[in-house]
Amino acid sequence: MTLHDPVQPDWRQERLTTFEVWGAPPGDDQFYAVLDSGRTGPMSAWADVIQYRNGQYFRETRFYRLFAGRWVRTVPDRTAAFWGDQIEAQTNHFELVFRQRDEEAARFLADQLEARYAQVCVDFNCNGTEADERYLKLVLEPGVQIAARGNRQGNIITVTLPAPSLTGLYYAALDTGEPGRNPQIDAIFSQHVLYPILYYASGGLDRWVHDRGGIMYVWAFGAWERIRRGLLPADELIPRPDVLRAAEPIPLDQLWAWSTDLYSRDLIRNQAAALIQFIDETYGPEQVLAFFRALRHAQSLPHWIEVVGLPYSEFEAKWAAWLKNYRAADIQSAGSDQTRPANQSTN
Image 1 (tube, rainbow, N blue to C red):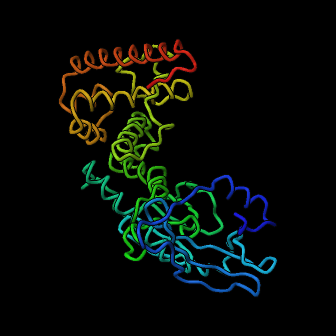
Image 2: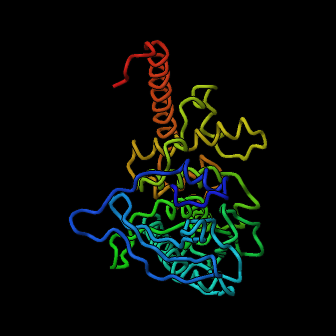
Image 3: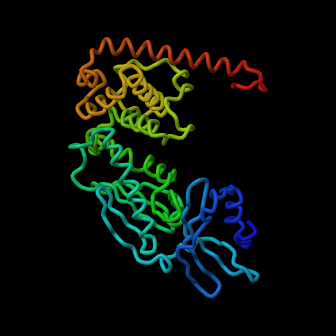
């Protein structure tokens, strides 16, 4: 870390805080390569570097300045003067806006999002339910450091993201161009792309804007898909047992209407997620998908179950028994955790 700019204390401290050892490639494999580089001034430079990192290769644009006779890594140049003009492009599902120097990384990112989009549409059988036109606009900007979703304008949802050349991308190997595991792309997809796909495939965005009854099931299906794909962080897992233990369950036929009360909404959201888990465990994943396809036609929860073709009374009885066992198991687990000595392992 001595090669990091000492006159940028906040940036340097952030680098120190997030520092980790990246490891070394096996055998005689190359450790890194400088793919391109140049000067931005007499005392400053940049480099497009790909470097071994934890079993993969991580590519990013880095910036340097001359300090005390040596080059030290410094804060990124985020100006349009370096990154160039904006370019607009289209992929199968996205409107894409990026800076000229970010084009290769931007198209790589878009390709990876398209691959994840296609997988979700296979999983949920989106054929015939997609929007007629592109509805997601991805704006990649070097000056942006935190992803943000903007307001919907007409039929377009705009998502503004940091330039992928700066956040970095993983490749499977140094010189093949084959994508590696990219958790940051998984996060972008999970947070900003997945749910709009499900909104359109389950009734259309207008339906969920004007009639929010049942929308929590769209969220529950999204969480279910993220769990299946290993995309849901542990701290986001729902249903949350503590929420389900905190109050008596809401009757099944009332698990539909949108609540303006945040506490009630959180309870409904967690019970909705539990309901999808119940369907998966009791009827299997194919029935979960049947429920998803039927959601666009449903006007209430009993109607939804009817559209799927299951007897409501039987479904309700199985759900009540499952939820009772679920809550009891979690209460017992919580009790054993509370009575366990502090120094006793849970393993």
